[in-house]
Length: 290
Image (cartoon, rainbow, N blue to C red; front, side):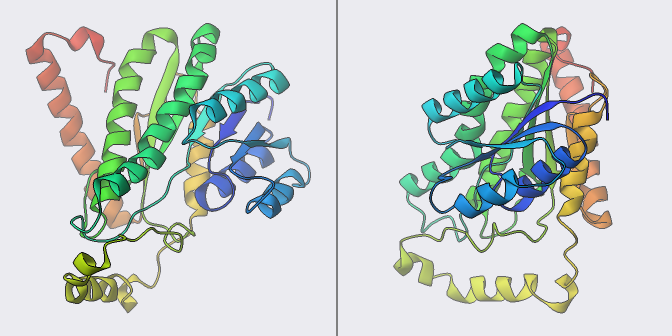
C-alpha cells in the first residue's frame, strides 16, 4: 500500500497485540511492536516479531506501568521513523474473581495496566501528534465496558474507565487533528485468561466457591464451544488504521452477531443521551458529531 502509517502497538508479545502488529506490518505499515522485558521472558517473541518476513517491523521495549519507559519508547519510534501516526494501546491484563477478595492495592494494579498504561503512552505521544496536526489513538477495549458479567468486576471497571478516557480524548483532541477511538472486543480466545490474576485473599475467595464454580461451568459449556477467531480483532484494527481521517467511528464493536447487535444498540442509546445531555448543558459546541 502507498499510504504507510508509522504505528506503535503496545502489548505485542501475544494475543491481540501480536496479531495486530503482524497484520499491520504485512499490510505495508511501519510497525513498532512494544514489548516488556525483551531480553527476558519476551525474548523469544521479540525475535519472532523481528524476523517476520517481508515486513517493516521493529521491536521496541516498553513497560506501560512506567512513564519513563513510555517516553523512551515514543522517542525511539520518532527517532527511527521521523514521525508517529498511530498508537494502538493494547497492553493490559485481567484480574478474575469476585470483587470482595481483591484488596485496593490489587485493584490499583488492574487499573495501572489497563487504564494508566494507556494514559502514560498517550501522554508520551500526544505532543508529537499535536505538532503534526494528525494522528490516531486507538484503544483496545472490551464488551465488558458496556456489559459487566460476574467475577470480572475489576476488569470491567478498568475497561469502562478506558472507554471514558477515549471519549474525552476524542472531543478534546479533535481541534488538533488527532483522533481517539476504541475497539470493544468480545472475549475471543487469547492467552489473557491463562495469565489472569486471582485475588490473594483465598479465605474470602472461598466464600464464593460454589457460585464461581457454576459460573465457570456455564461459560465453558458446549454452547460456548465456538468462541471465534481473535484475528478478526486485528483485521478490524487494520481497517481503522487505514480509514480516512475524520471518518473513524469513536466506538467499534467486534463480536459474534448477537453480542454485536446488543452492544451496538447500547452504543446508539448512549450517543443519543450524550447529544441530549451536552445540548442541555450548553456545551454541544465542544462535542464532536456522533
